[in-house]
Amino acid sequence: MTDKSTYWEQEKECMAREDLEQLQLERLQSTLFRVATHVPFYRKKFKEMNIDPDGFTSLNDVSKLPFTSKDDLRNNYPYGLFAVPLREVVRVHSSSGTTGQATVVGYTKNDIKNWSNLSARVLTAAGVDQDDVVQISFGYGLFTGGFGLHYGAERVGASVIPISSGNTKRQLTIMQDFKTTALVCTPSYALLLADTMAEQGININALPLKYGLFGGEPWSEGMRKEIQEKLHIVATDNYGLSEIMGPGVAGECQECNGLHINEDHFLAEVIDPETLEPVAPGETGELVITTLTKEAFPVIRYRTRDLTRLMPEPCPCGRTFQRMHRVFGRTDDMLIIKGVNVFPSQIEEVLFDIEGTEPHYQIIVEREGRLDKTTVMVEVMESIFFDQMKKQRQLIDQIKKRLATELGISVDVKLVEEKSLERFEGKAKRVIDKRSL
Image 1 (spheres, rainbow, N blue to C red):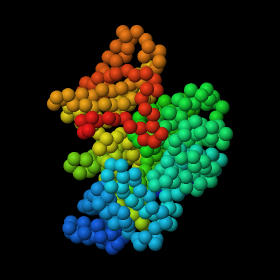
Image 2: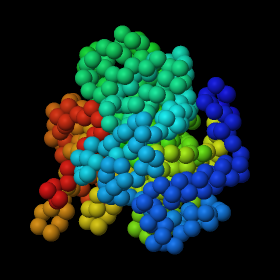
Image 3: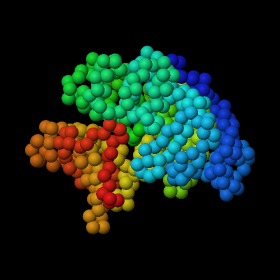
Image 4: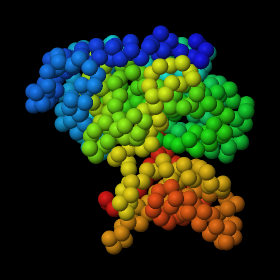
């Protein structure tokens, strides 16, 4: 069992399942009363579905409740789903709105307190404590990532460097001068930082960096290994989304084997995204979350579009909260190529296993006539790119064969020079689907 110092709230994080489920039920009942009373959208939904919010006596009844989608949030822009008057809202965050109408979320003073506390749990589980210097390279502003982990780190008592995203060379100067011990950013940006360190001749062994908390995009076990080897850190995954709270929904402990969901604040389900029925225990599906303690912006059965599976078996760390597998991909990031479901993370996993390839790739999907054509652009080491054509062809054939086995379809592979694919300071853009252009 993990040492007590690696818990933020041991009594809650190690609660008996029976007590936890009773607490979840009580908090669900309270949340249903709150939304039925104060949110016209849910009041109307409940009436249409003949749901009595006072009639819930079992957690199993949650499947009778309506889903909430991102479109529902957009259609109620900006404050239509708030459950408190605006005078009780002390913080407003929003999505960028780049894919449609922005979604807006609000927080009361108590919501902010809970958010800070849950982020503190995630940071503590990853190894961070009051002796650490935490460099937060997530964007600040309306995006929830930076602020959520910032307040969590301050709650833990760590020293926080709110550098935000971008300006990679300055990030590295700050990391060296301020003696950063924990890095918070997207995994793809961590690799960009590692590559820039190598270019600048920075000795990673001379840095006090120990931990990396990464999130914001799906990433593979291969990418974790690459980050850990290049930055000499323990790399943990954490999960959150603005519509639910932001960071702090779930996070890995140092076992690095699934993300503990903060189940005393969130009720998690996994459903089949097509049938909308629950999947069998341990099977992969779409994560659905109901908030249990949110005051300003409670949501019922929110469809996250993130694909994962629940891991009910106990974790050696001693926490009793159920774990979720790292996100495999999203239902809306999923590519359907020649009738087959393909996720970028599957391609990434294969590439990380093949010697000579770099951790940067791009997937281009086009339509030739009536057929889909997929090309995977793969960065390779300079020595391979300028090697004889025979060796290049062997590597291409190896990658194509491995991808065909993993994906169930054949794809084209094109080798490109190191650093020729665009780098991203935020979420990496892995897919260019020209079929929809």
